[in-house]
Image (cartoon, rainbow, N blue to C red):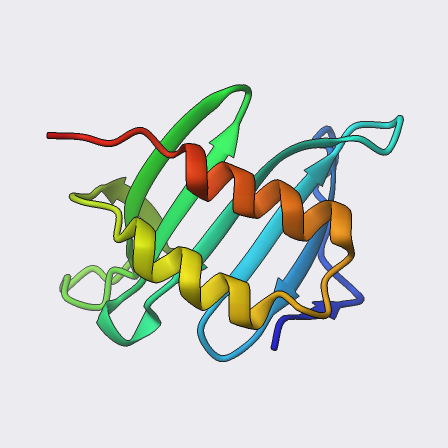
Length: 121
């Protein structure tokens, strides 16, 4: 079940963000000063290095999380790299079950973002 991480790190010059996490998902939600949601990033599937669905500034991206462990130089920070197909149905179902304790506004926003993810052929 997704629970809020109360001490989410804030970055100077960036919008306020909240972090929710469980053993499958990490959900970052960015907020405008007015309190409205600006965007979100849903990270998942850490067993296979992880993936991230991001919706920010009206744009979607779906990326793999490269933790750099396969490189002899080893990344100091994970980076996002372009990834293939987003498993929309599986993530929608899993999020539905894990989001019951989220604030309704956040849960509905993320469900809507997942549902509107563009289908690719």
